[in-house]
Length: 232
Image (tube, rainbow, N blue to C red):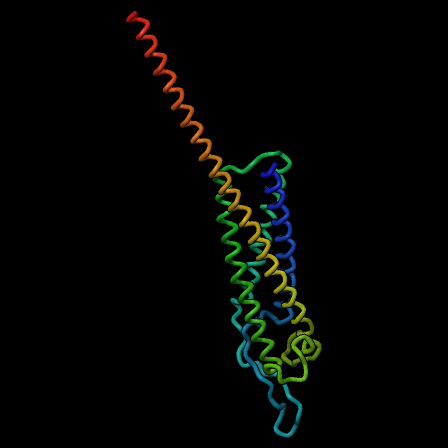
C-alpha cells in the first residue's frame, strides 16, 4: 500500500513536471522568433540620445547575450518535458498493472531524476540572472521612468518584436523553478524507494541466512541423534 502511494505521488510529480516544462518551452520558442534568434539574456546596452540636439533617447544594444544561454534553457525545458512524459506513462502503467520497479530500475530512475534536477537548476539560474541583467540594462538600473514590464509596451526600435518579452521570461522563470521543485520532489521519492528496496533486500538476505543457519542446526541435531541411536 505504501509503495502504491509512492508510485502515485511519483506519477503526480511527473505530470506536474510535464506541465511546467511545457510552459517553459512555449514562451522561449516564441521569444526566439520575436527576437530573430537573438538572446536577451545577459545582453548589455544603454540609453543614448538619438542625436546631439534631440532629447529623445534610444536604447542601444552593445552586445547581445550568448545564444547558448537561451538554447540551453530551451534544451532543459524540452528534456524535462520528454522525460516527464515518458516516466509519467511508465509509472501509470505500473500503477494499473499493480507492479513495482526492481531495485535496478529504481536506482536508474534516481540517477535520471538527479541529473534532471541539476540541469534544470542550472537553466533556472541562467534565466533568472540573465533576465535581471537585461532588465537592469533597459531600465538603466532603475533610473528610467518605466519598469522592465512597462518597457515591453514601448517600441525599443531594435528591429524586432519586443511587445511581450517580459511576460515570456516571467512565465519561463516560473516554469523552470516550478519544474525544478517537481523534479526535486521526484528525486526524493526515488531515493526513498531505493532505500526501501535496499532495506527490503537486506532484510530478505538476513531471513535467508537465518533460515539456512536454523536448517543447518536442525540437520546437525538430527544426525547426532541418529548416531546416538546407532550406538545404543
